[in-house]
Length: 279
Image 1 (cartoon, rainbow, N blue to C red):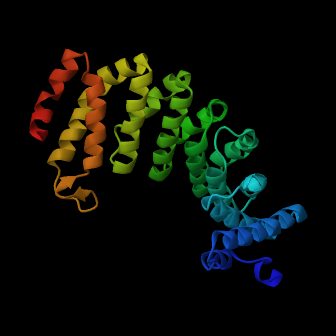
Image 2: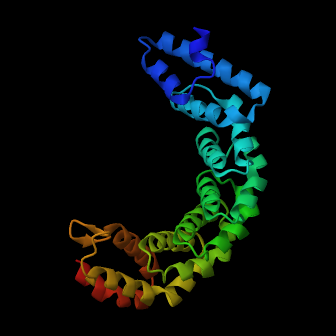
Image 3: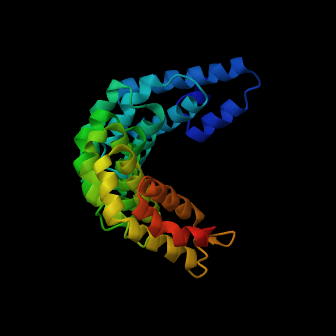
């Protein structure tokens, strides 16, 4: 029996768990796997670390405790290789949340990866930060995220905008740092970047009066033009949904315009024509 479960691969463990006929049998398999993972962690073998973490994530999704493997996430994130970092960040987002103190230990690794030369590593760090960022981490890493909003690759700009949205939610005092960067995203042609930029501007307007006045004066006309261009654009198969060009971007733009037009007659007047057309 030991030879079946000792050092098993993830797919073998999943197959064994799914073959269980009772809950007690499943608990026995999971208990044996957890014991093997603990033994491997104590041996500090780097070769099995990614496999152990993959199995821990599946065990966690079944509802069993996996707190003993949290430090393995940090070790994988600190690894130089991309495959190890990828599963380390995935484990970080799944096994930890912002309330756990161990999360503070990953701040330095995140800072290094946000400045990494490999854009895919940068993307991993942004994705993790956007999902589990605490207020303390937001204050420490906000300058790196702000810089990445101007990154050359649109996927990085998109992730940086989403990450910025979480940062300003966690620490509203940082909102003024992102106003200029957010306004630059409203000029994007890439729909993925544009929709995240609109969401960031919406978040800034709801928590910061200075941002609201800035976007109302500087960006209202540009947003209306963008909405009009999308509404009147020719058929684009990559954005078409039931004959409408990118309805999700439509909705985001309308939500932002609602905030900008609320209580301001001039801004509201500018929107009248395009809103009538949409209706």
